[in-house]
Image (cartoon, rainbow, N blue to C red):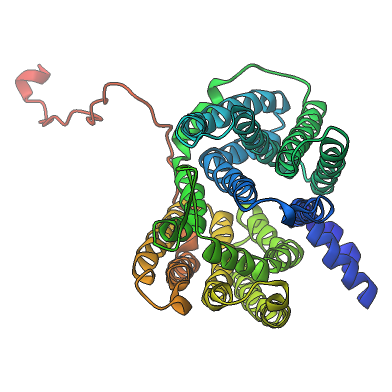
Length: 490
């Protein structure tokens, strides 16, 4: 998210209540606005089309379809996007703009093929075993591919710092989806669930097309150097695992509870656990403001300290390097503590609002018993992810990898235990996983603080690596040179 700090500093420098509010909303636009737009569109469609009047089976089939579309589109795109992001960042830094389109095309092909590898067998099963109509299955499949393309193209616009455009394209796509749902149902007479699903599919594809066109507008040239992209997957294989394990950890506790007696099985295909899934959704929204706070403060404060340290490394004195390093890590600690304090206040307020008002909206009983522990887990989870971002700043891919792996494994183990506990402790899995990941990342950051000089100055090779026959280590021959005799002189 580098680059929004300048804009935020301009907003906040007047230090008034109005500018503080404007700065908060700007941070929201560049971070979580797309998510809020999609959710608002779904809520509006359900209200206007009177989704609550639909039969239970059709209502749950639509809900499960949308749930699977979002979860598995995130999972199938996660292994590739981090590496592609790194490649594109390096290309832009080196001003090799003609290499962006090869990266875009290779990445899109890999994302779509990998996603289809899982989606097509699932769709065949849904139709042949579950008996769902082929047109409904195909529309759900297209919705999934559309969202995959949306997430993929977002990556390039984010690196180009076009965050407002991303939010605008989501708004255009979801507004079109809302209007189309009204057309499909009230004019063409389609059923309410299918009208919503088809409209969302078209809305996602419209958003993806707008993003795709903007990428091609920015980077019209094509070097056709496709092999360079593939080399990055070998060089930065850590990023593949980091992003996938972190994303898997976000949902693996849900998958565990999908295997319990509480789970609902639909058309022998879909599996979900409505109370636990709803509690997870509420917990995410309780703590999602952490992303806004973190992006704002890191871009405004920490990034400047990091830049000062990097400048000192490349052209400063030894004392400048030491001083800037100390200031950078003091700022890092300050940002983590500030994020902890601010997010705690926000989470408590949102928690009280949910506890007071949600039971009146029908969210009570088991959902509200599960919610507190899951919310506590997500509170720590967002702090852990902030530490992973800091590890990225220091190129500590190994530290980020063990953090993501520890988080995923501990969440799985804790959830397997939690299914045997009382419902109020169902969220202990994500809580334990987040605590584990947070501790690993914290210890790794402390290790980096003490060994940053070795990490910065002792990494790399004087001579380039190569493959072939190893040369002989012998440099010269040592001979015993004796003084010449008189006969030899004669």
